[in-house]
Image 1 (tube, chains in turn yellow, green):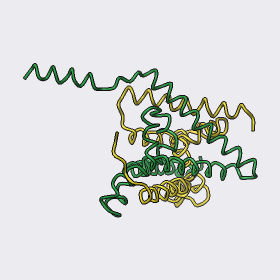
Image 2 (tube, each protein chain N blue to C red; image 1 turned 135 degrees about the horizontal axis):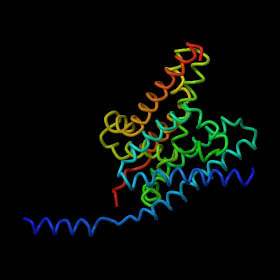
Image 3 (cartoon, each protein chain N blue to C red; image 1 turned 90 degrees about the vertical axis):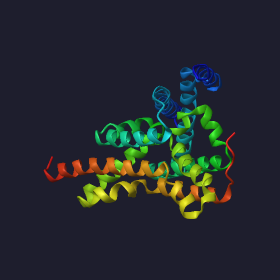
Image 4 (cartoon, one colour; image 1 turned 180 degrees about the horizontal axis):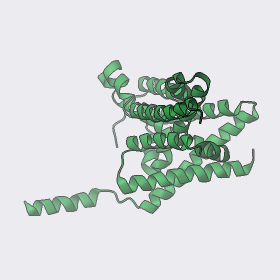
Length: 121
Length: 149
């Protein structure tokens, strides 16, 4: 419960978002492409051994952005390869990412039943 | 025709909202920072209640996803995103919104071709390329372990 942990989460998370905002303003990339890029980048940074120590230090500032999801997929594959060899290449990623994917699908589906689509204003 | 084109261009310039890059960046920084600080707060709370580090992290993401989906259903997320931009699109909140929003918007087209197909409009590419990247890197890693690196 150290105040500095919150400060780190705020500054790191805010900086990642600000950097992507600049990229979006400069390139007019659509959010879908941005999200794909973030997940791939997170996986690559994980593979290079950068994201794990970074996330240990920055906490939610590193795990809440989608980069963290990419890192989670990579970590899942790495751990599964360590345990099961080549089979882990196929099992690890989706297993590690399952909670986030399933939650988005379940809540998203329920929301589509409960709420009514609004006109854009 | 030339005159009309000029008039049209002037009109487009007049009605296109002017986005100041500095302002957008500041809003993205503040809102993104707030979302991550909220995440940190939930994570610390759960760890304080005895949750394991990894479980606390996953529960935090689930809560952020839940809140984002509800705000999407209430048409509030879209309004926040218009101001905050990447500040709410880059965190997991943007992923949750990208799943709920098209599912809701296209529900009139039916369970399978409306909700079922559209729910993956952005989640699909994210899952595909995330799986592809981690699978490709995992293959390299596996080759490394096989060759005893």
